[in-house]
Image (cartoon, rainbow, N blue to C red; front, side):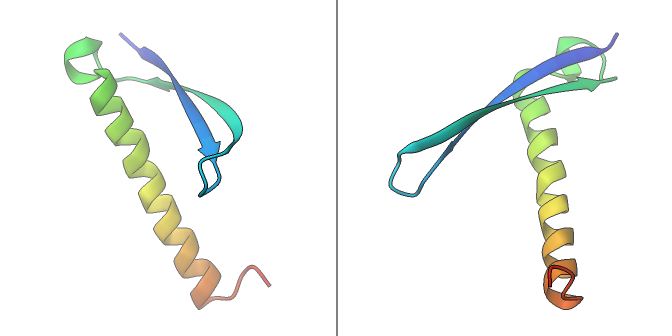
Amino acid sequence: MKVVFQIERRISKLDGSELRVEVAHGLTNKPGTRDADAAKLLDLVRGHWSIENRLHWVRDVTFDEDR
């Protein structure tokens, strides 16, 4: 069984004023709700982005790719 999920992100400025709302959809092959409850799916998504952010920061800073 596949699990489909939706994440709503509210992006705001440091002063708390909201800029926009983003909605992302995902699909996983995690079975059922025991292995893919909302908290676990959120951890997986956040874990993915922490890897992405570290990788891109290293490439941007070390290899000066953004210039």
